Structure formats: structure tokens, C-alpha cells
Length: 216
Image 1 (cartoon, rainbow, N blue to C red):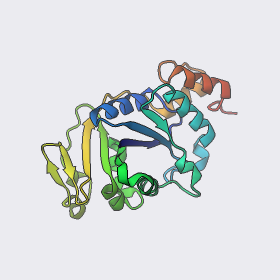
Image 2: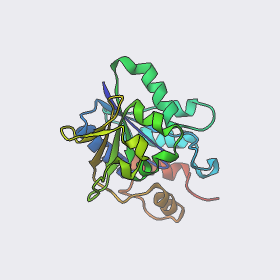
Image 3: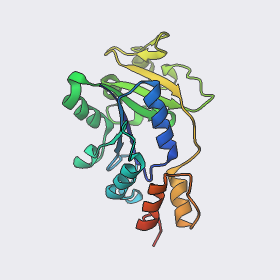
Image 4: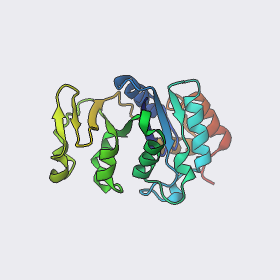
């Protein structure tokens, strides 16, 4: 099995997330991509985030009908803050014998990977698939990671990726960049502006029905 793991706040999920996931699915010939909303991200205040329930309903609505996309609430089942290293360990321990895991992450988030909990361990646990914007040319891992750690990875021209000591690879791949942001969508909803064609229709209908982004 080859799975992609796509985490995020998804507040709300939008076409930018979905299109990028579709492209990564094809690029790496994955069997599925798991959308995994974070429950309590350590870098965001809890008050800033819509309840997990609403974000779950929106993700489920957005991926409905796509047999290659699935949903996981594993991060909501844990107590305390959500850490990617713990989530990846959980998935690998459950499916290790048959699973090749790709942690899908945006370029900006990867640039800040050294601020994550146990980032060194995380980068050695599974493959990393970094989504880059058109025009971005990776200059090497040493531009992002400390030299003593990046030196443990070797660029493999055949696979166009950086192979680490555990055999896992860090890839940089261009995806179609749709300039859509969840924060802008929330602002538009609160201001009474249209979000049509920014999110799937069933997500837009859920947002309108639940009034989750309307400030009191």
C-alpha cells in the first residue's frame, strides 16, 4: 500500500487542498490520500479554530465520491495538542508491514519544519512529499535543515529526491497553485461575500447552513 497523509486545519477545506491532493496522488501513484484534520495544532490558539466536528463534516463533504480520498479523525482521538510525529508513529505501528507512507506538506510548512516537535525523528520515519509552487527551484536541503542533519541525505537523480539513512526520501514536486486561503474564505463569509468556486458546493452549503463563520 502507498498512502499519502495530508494534514491541516482545513478551516475550511477548499479547492486548493483538493487539487493539490489529486496531483500528488498521481505523481506518486498512491493508493489513497488520507485527509487528517488537526485537532489542537500547537502553533494555533484553540480559540482561533472552528470545532473539529464542523471541520470534519466539511472534509467529509468535500471528498465524498472520490474513492482515492479518505478521512481520519485520529488526531481528535488524542488528548492534548496534535503532533505530526506521534500521528505518523501511530499509523506506521498499525500498518507498518504493508505500508509505504508519504507525508504531504506545503513548501512554506516544510521551510519551518525545524520548529516542529521531534522534527529529526519525523523526517526519518517516512517519505516526505513537499508541494512547491511553479517556479520554485529547490537549492538543496542544506538551505532548510541544519548542515549536520541534511548531510545525512543524498540526492538521487534517478528518483529526483533526497534519500535518507532510513531509506525514506524527501521529494520536492510542483503542483498547481490555486491562490485560495481558508482565512480569506472565512473573511468573505463573515462579510456576506460569495465563496462560490472557492470550495465545493456541498461545503459552501454546509457553511451557509451552519453559519460557522458568521461573527456574533
